[in-house]
Image (cartoon, rainbow, N blue to C red; front, side, top):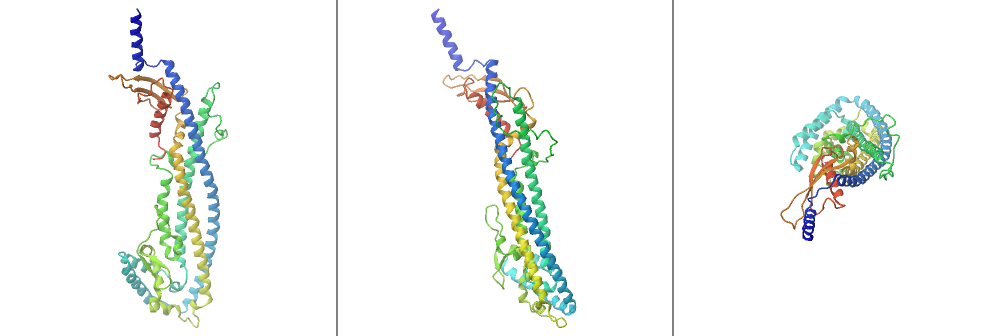
Length: 455
């Protein structure tokens, strides 16, 4: 009899070692509860992460208000200076009409000389694009007043064109900023819905891991703003990616006007370098332009006016005893243009600074979103009253080699997702306290992979 019980004990020990005895319903319930407590902590941590994300955006909104205030003030100063320049130009044009015929004759000889000089100078330095530069310059000269080539500072047409591009760039930046703000708000609101649901779901007799989290009872007691967030769009690849094309367009705008702006408007590329083509030096003054800058704004070739005799004569033309380009109107126009140019540069500087801030902030937002944003997707997936995590089955595989531990196959229900099945390494048996955490984490990782947040 003693031998019988010895064999039975060894047999049960062998079965236990091979994990062939599956867990009972009570065991599965206990494992599920342990896993659910683990997930509660993960959800709590993620909600706190989204709160930090919201705080980053709120700080950005404060900077945004200051940015709008500075931009509005600078825009008003720019428009006033541009209006003054337009008035001065009209007065100069009135004086020019007295000698319009002789002025126009000089101008018609000045234009081809300027074009040919520019093409010659450009071709000597740059590898391609001289034909395009010539055509663009011809179009510019046909729209330009003869007087304007001798006015220091940007001509009014150039300033007006840049003003339009600045306005468009500002509108694009505001649109992207609003999309980012709405996306963060959407994540935050959904996370608060998850928090409310998890808070209400916890039984009163159990410690509530969500009791220390910030509650927002007013959020759901009033009609909420409708957020058209890009986050739910399958094509959404993160907040940071929303600013890449804008940064490139900004570089194009700034570089196209750099012949007038000077070197302080160099715009860095994504790797931090500055776009430089072959450098060419203007024959008069210490300024410099690149081949790319001339291709984008051939009006820079007007700086070559000193090389054309007929262009020089325009500067000293006598209109019935008056020399418009040697009188006070020219000085007043140049002063107004200098002011308009300065405020245009300042406007660009403010735009550039805020865009760079958002470019960097969006990186931080994506970091938060990638790590914690998954919790917002639970807003519509935690409605079941059966709990958020449940292990349905645990099956241990049988191995021929008794030296090795058998892996465990588990079937798990997480949130409102379809049931998932995967394998747990044999060195963590189902009765190990770590088993529930390993299973819960693996299920959560698989859920995160299927959630569209940041790719």
